[in-house]
Amino acid sequence: MSYFRERGLNTFSLRPHCGEAGHVSHLVTGYLTSESIAHGLLLRKVPVLQYLFYLSQIGIAMSPLSNNSLFISYHRNPLPEFHMKGLNVSLSTDDPLHLKFYEEALMEEYSIAAQVWKLSSCDMCELARNSVLQSGFEDKVKVHWLGPNYKEEGVLGNDISRTNVPDIRVSFRHETLVDELCSLFRTRNIHRIENDNDDNNDVDGGQRI
Figure 1 (cartoon, rainbow, N blue to C red):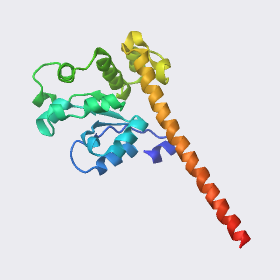
Figure 2 (figure 1 turned 180 degrees about the vertical axis):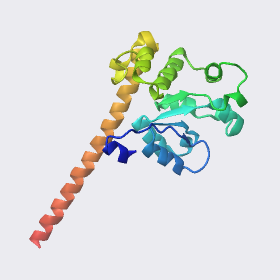
Figure 3 (figure 1 turned 45 degrees about the vertical axis):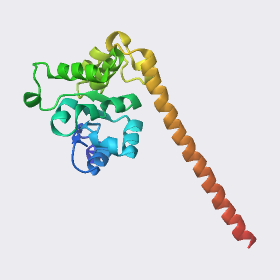
Figure 4 (figure 1 turned 180 degrees about the horizontal axis):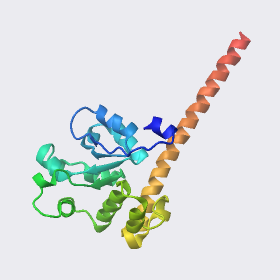
């Protein structure tokens, strides 16, 4: 994809099944190459990768009903924990013809998640907003659902009349992420200054000798 981008050629958005089963390296590859992933269950076992997915806000479309049938019980699913921490998670369907009981498979996911995990209306609307942002729909469709400024960061990108997500929730998510990133950059700069000082001291010491 990088090769294509360098030459102005068409690319595609990679959204693989990742971290549902298999080796953790799948998540590493997904982090390096994907706009978003499906499932991401194994992130619960790798805090470092979980943190990187949070900092980069890589989308994670999770299907707890499918996971409940195949891999992990509904009550152990990490979706509510990821959501609480601020990872970019959404609800999705997987194998609906095999696993769902009702015609509206996605509504079934939302309904059960709301009841089992006691999700608030704010939580539900935030998950739905994340879903649209993660999707591959063209710009005019996202504008219809999220508003014309949806690409802006923080409150500026939230049209509450369309998303029904309170500005205070969006502001909290944005400010927390920015603070975390700033903290990392400050720490990196401190270490860089300390290393530069150590190098200068080594040079001065060598000259005196």
